[in-house]
Length: 146
Image (cartoon, rainbow, N blue to C red; front, side, top):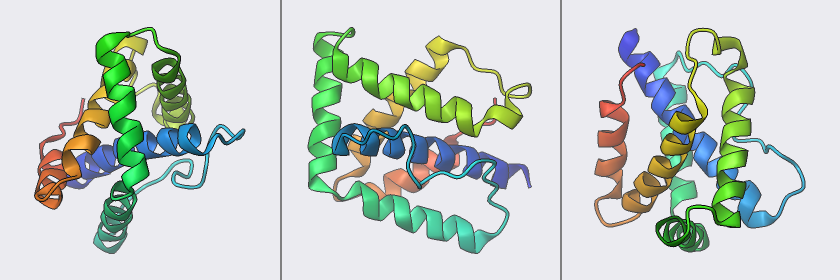
């Protein structure tokens, strides 16, 4: 059961990153979209596989990949860039919104959330290649519960 919770956490973090990028890319005025629902709980393996399939399909958007690379480039050149600030702000907002009930159990400070947001961008950029599926499963299998 603990392993399913770890999978749930890693999938949830990837979905938060993709949602933050979706908001950034499409210039939505809304702070959140429909990828993540409050108090999401993956208990069934079919739902888990369905979520992985959706993540995989979202990752293969060429335009999304170029946005990720631009944000990572800005992060390397200027950490205080507006693009990075917007992405991290939205990631943090979505994370706190979806983790509200678990806030007492899983408190993460601002620095950790920023680190996870940038790491997820890097992971997503690495997943989009010939061996992307293997990297996705590897990432999901190594996430540990804090």
